[in-house]
Image (tube, rainbow, N blue to C red):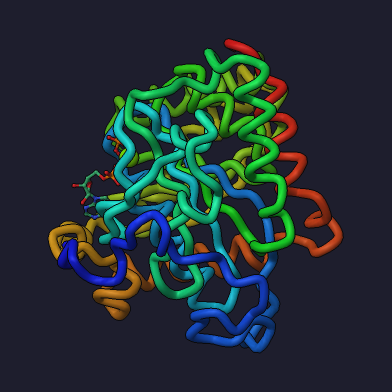
Length: 305
Ligand SMILES: Nc1ncnc2c1ncn2[C@@H]1O[C@H](COP(=O)(O)OP(=O)(O)OP(=O)(O)O)[C@@H](O)[C@H]1O
Ligand SMILES: [Mg+2]
């Protein structure tokens, strides 16, 4: 992890503000990216825990950021928030400070480099489903301004069919369901699909196979889930691709640097970058308008589901 005394650990008053112009800290000037980056709201979720959601979320965010998009990464895994560790930053405030109105959004957001800013999660400290109406309104007001300041948001939702993971996933435009070849992961992914479909009226989900031994194994995982979904659920599945099992992922976490930045030529980083490009291409600009606002509205409307 990076040295905690470096500039990535600002004191509250010095928290890195999100630039309102494309010039602030961008390694690639916004809109000069080789291809149009599509702003969108992407929620990364899974049935089973430990399948790679946090690494996928962080690296998708950084890959989009490296393409020139201004990206907000939201750590919504309220059980075990750890996007900050994978990014190698040490937040001073968390989303809990926003909810309690102790801090402004600019104090809470922390710059993670490459056009990416993190809204750090508050492990176990608050549960969206249990927030009061006033707290929900406060949170919404705080994040409302972000609509114009970012091109994309990537949400690490946490695992399982607990209310937070489901709520965050269901509110997003794009849902990425991470699944590994393990039978338990596939079974739990199916359980997650079932809840998304029957309880939240979600109609499409993108399946991302992680830690695969080969491209064929990734496709096999997808086909297994597709077979079940077609038989039993009214939900469409798109195959987003596969990330190989790669020791560079763990090495990058030890270094406190996302793998697409630490080892950009390793197999996992190449695959993650391709997935980010696919998501960017798939998103249409006309769908973007108000996407983030809509996300928060839906999210804050949910009550203890
Ligand atoms: N493609 C990969 N190749 C090798 N190891 C990986 C890969 N993806 C993730 N890992 C490793 O798997 C472990 C779990 O990853 P991660 O923390 O991202 O999962 P998670 O789904 O967010 O877990 P949790 O449900 O606990 O939040 C980590 O040790 C990570 O380094
Ligand atoms: Mg995680």
